[in-house]
Image (cartoon, rainbow over the protein chains, first blue to last red):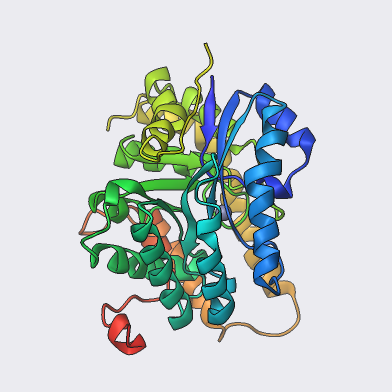
Length: 270
Length: 88
Ligand SMILES: [Zn+2]
């Protein structure tokens, strides 16, 4: 089955991974800007990273028939440095016209601090100003519930935010329903250690239904599995779910959400 | 949304997995007990015990699943006054 991975960090993966993903049915992906595993020292470091996301990575993906899209921001972890964050936010518009840029992301919270919240609000303002979609990172483990509520507070307090153009990622059992109830799209991240297993993700699909729900691997430089979406497809088949529902979650939903972005020029396979 | 498999099928499929997971937890707790020192006062031990208790109950009065209740147990609290505190 053709599928789309809406959240995967290919800059951290090898070309062999592109080949494996293509063989497993991956036809498109979106790569949000994120933390590189170390704090970057200057705005030029981010400029180079954004070049990589908008030039090099789509070319590498195209060699395997995968269409690559991206989102730009300074991530929540580095947002603790407010001065650097403001420099990066001021530089982002240089890249918003690149053909594979879908919006601002993954912005969010990490430890739910005042600085992170300040920079989240400034990213929101940037997205509103340039009419961009937003992709959101919610914190992990004990910080997730509090951080997700804080993020939803900031989004819903601003009437200029259209929830149908915002994807809130890394939802789990205690956050999925609230995100969906408030009209946002929700993404589940299948991550081997700290996040959701394919089994639990299918439980959430069964409990919340398939509307506005996406599933991703968030494959990155840490322990992660870029082929996690096919794992979910297999789990849904083992539980005898219909091919229609499976396709909705791993293909139709991402396409429907991303189609709201002007730059989403995805070409389905014949 | 309805689930295609019935409870008998789910049990047949998951019995050995559940058994294996219970054993893993039991062996971890044994390991803690065998190791030198004492962590009984560590607040994480209380959370582990409370988590195990939730797993033995059924859904709570609000209809929250065990998984959701355990997630909330291991979560920091949210207070809607946070924006005031941060002056944002
Ligand atoms: Zn990510």
